[in-house]
Length: 129
Image: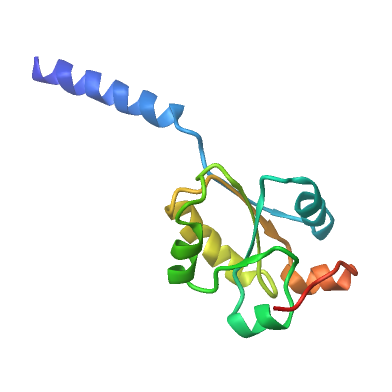
């Protein structure tokens, strides 16, 4: 009887996990990132760079999440299935930030390949704080 209960519980656990929506984090090109920024009304643009860098220049409408404390504060009321468009100066901080975002429960994360430097190189607009 005990084994049967364990088997049933295991089956329910597997079914529950497979039913949950999987999180994903995908690195995308500058062109695709720009397209998403300009066409996805429900997406949130996140700058995971440093405060001075954000103040100097950032993508329009981007929210600064320079550290985990800021990230939690800025995103506390954001739905977990919101599309997040994540970038930093070169692309390295975004990788770290994406892992924290997944731990916070976010499911749809796109990272700007080569960061804001690539965005600027392509001639896309930035703004100052």
